[in-house]
Image (cartoon, rainbow, N blue to C red; front, side, top):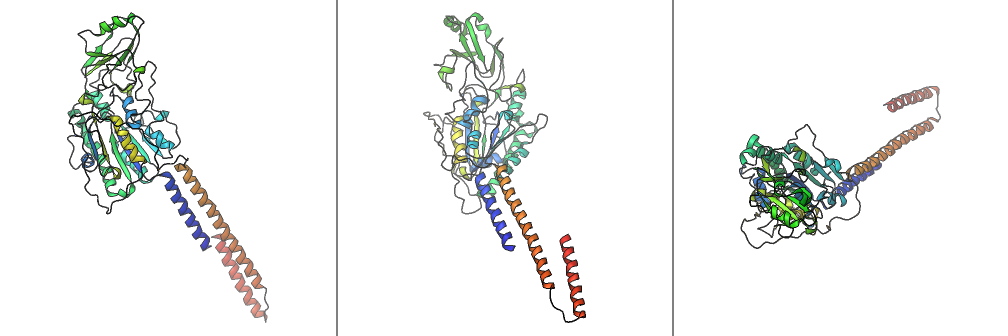
Length: 493
C-alpha cells in the first residue's frame, strides 16, 4: 500500500504540473491598466518614489502618445488593442455600429490562442461571451478602489489562473467631463496619488519576483481639455440641401441631396463659423478610408462640440455616453495635433527591462502601442537575471523634437510560442485533477479494506491447531477472543 500511495502522489503532482503549463503557454503574463481620459501631463506632480516614476526609470516610457482622430474611445480602443491594421477603428458612416466584440482585439486573440483572459469593469461586459474570456462588470452602485481591483488582477496572474488581465478605470474621464480638465481637479481627493499608490504595489511585486514573468502596462485612449460651448451648425445650411448627417460631437459628416453640393458648401464656408470644413481628400490626419466618409466633414474648434437639431449628439463612440452631462466642463475628440488630446504610455517588467526599442520618436500614436503589448504577451520569456536584485535599466524616452514622420505598420505575426491547438481552460483542468484524485482515493480505500479482510481470514486459519490439554485450549480461546474484540473496535474506528 505504501507503493500505491507513492504512485498516487507522483501522478497528482504530474497532473498539476501539466495543468499549470497548459494554462500559461509561453510563460508570459501581462497586466494592463487602461486609464480612460489620461492626459499626458496628469502624472507630472507625483512622488519620485511612486509607482509611475519607477516605471519611467526602470521600464518603457512614452511621454506623449497621439490618439487617432477623433480622439474618442471607440477609435482608440481599437487602435490600442488591435493595431493599425484593425478593420474597425476607422468606421465612420451612416450605418456605423459601435461595439467592442471584434475578433482582432487583443483579448479575443489571446483567448483564441488558448490563453485565459480576465477583463475588469469594462462597460461592454454584457456582450462578451467567449471560452477562456471572463469579463467582470462593475456593479452599478458600488465603487471599486483601483488598488483592490489591481490586487485582484495581479493575484490571478500570480496563481497562473490568468495570462492576460485588463483593468478599466473611468474616474479620470468622468471627473474631466463633470468638473473640467485642470490639474487642480485631478488632484482633488488625492485621485492621482491613489492611482500612483495602486500602481506602486504592482511594480514592487514585479521587482521582487522577476521569475514570475509578469509584465505591466499603462495605456489610455485620449486626453482632456476644458469645454467652451456648443456650435449649432444647422444655421449654416438649408435642410432641403441635406440628405443625412452623422454627428459625433467632435466631428459631423453631411451627405448632400443630389444637385445641392455647391449650395451646401458655399453656406458651410461662412466666415462666422467655429468649425473647419473638410472633404475626404483634405481631411488632415485621416484615419478613415475615403469610402466611409461623408462628402463634407465638419470639425469644431478645440473646446467646442457640434450641435445639430434633429441629429443630437449621440456620443456613440464614448464608453459611457449615458453618463455624459448635458453641459460638460471637459471634452475630447479633437485632432491628434491638439496637445491636450495627447496621452502617455508606460510599461514595466522583464519584457521592458531594456526599454521598448521604439523607432519613431516624434509621432507615436495609440496604434503603435499594440505591437509592444502584443509582443510582451506572446513572445518567449526573457532569461532570468543572474541575481534576484533588480539592476538599473536603460531608460527609453521619446523626445518631443520634430523630424520626418515615420510610422510602424503592425502586422502581428502568429506567435511561435503559441500553437493553434485548443487547450484546456482552468475549470476543465481542475475537474480532471479532481477526477484523478477521487479515483485514487477510491482505489486506496478498496485496497485497505481488502487487506483487512485477508488478514482476518488468515487468523481464522491459524486458529485450527492441536492442543495438548484443556488448559491450553482455554488459553488459546481467550487469546483469540481478545483479538476479535480488538479488530471489531479497529473497524469501527
